[in-house]
Image 1 (cartoon, helix red, strand yellow):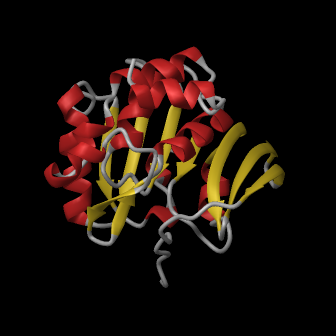
Image 2 (cartoon, rainbow, N blue to C red; image 1 turned 60 degrees about the vertical axis):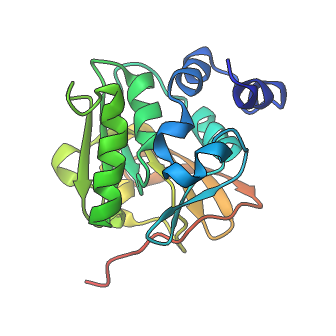
Length: 207
């Protein structure tokens, strides 16, 4: 187990065995530009090109724990970027689960897909990468057990609320907070807010 993973466990950010295993098996170094590989163990966000970043491991760990992830779930990963969160999610949901990774930038979408397939997740049909507007979700595969959003928005897109199963959970950055949302009914959501975070903005379609 790496020093980074040990530190995240000691600080209380990583708790669930399955998520700990994912962080241990899916090394962050595989998702970084070559010139930044030496920073893979640093608990900081790092640039991955196209004006985007790979999120701070502490933040990713917190978001994963909030999502209450498990085997066999279908997860929508909005703003998949480097592919790291998509690969981590693929490890957690396993062979009977599915991860739909959405990235708006084609170059970054290809980068993330290639990175995730270093672990055969695309080849094995667990992860599917789509270049599209993440704020609109991906209705073709809805509903989702879980939705993870890795870019900040000013409000939660209605499309994402609609595509979440009743009983499903979503974690999404809103302005400088992380929101945990649980869908209790068609238009009934429970929400908790965790303040003090910074994310690249989610580019929302103007159409």
